[in-house]
Image 1 (cartoon, one colour):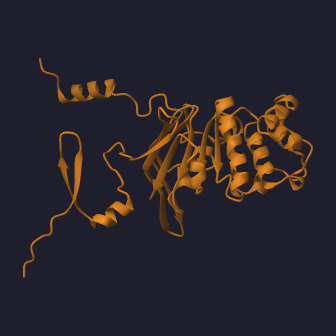
Image 2 (tube, rainbow, N blue to C red):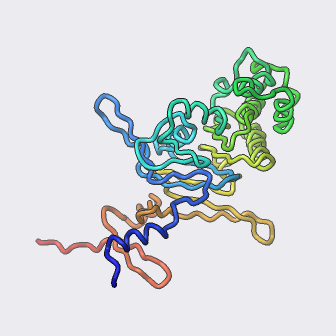
Image 3 (cartoon, rainbow, N blue to C red):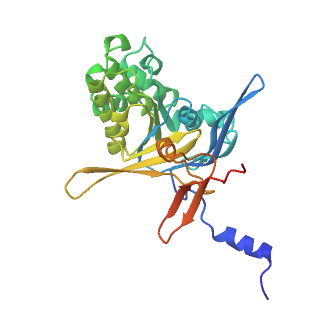
Length: 306
């Protein structure tokens, strides 16, 4: 007896692997819409993203592309409108207010661009690192000293923010973000207010935390020097992931970077704007399936009726 259509659909669903599998961060068709005075702004338009545990990833994009909205969603500061957003197996859409507070306190750490937002000015560096642990009821003194030493600012333990440079403040801020042993740290333009030499020190601290503590790190940045120092850079455009640049080391020790367009789950991809301009691609394109690739061609000119 042949199976019915409903049985075939059920069988296909049963054997289909869940999107993302065991990925540490899963965003599936993620949507975030803001409404102000009757106007809707779609900041995320069905974004797909997978990040594995222990990765160090840079998110890049122009102003208004949606990258900061994505970071706010992953940090638990903002709630998506629709889709799926999971971090460490936790569903960010279904969390209660209490669960969201617990998530921000213990699962994720956050580093702001503005150094003044990361540290309490009347506390020393060590006291700033101890504060999140105190709120969580954890032992503090030894952990704080170890984190400051790991990030190269142990000598700042007794200094307040006004007695530290911008780079030192940001490295202490990383220690604060790591205080409660989070599974994920998020950094919003952490070197945006720093010079290139100081930025390198801050980013080296992030790499060290990622490498030695195994924490997953996601960094939103405009800084091309930062994005070139990670294994994967994800580009966002118009509220969707548009490209990924993967970096690897060849047999001679040289770093090779390869950029890919991102194909989402329904077959959409974003062509680079300079490609579209060079070939005058607008509205429609022709697709041709070859044995090992798909050709994308400008639409044929329609004959004039004159």
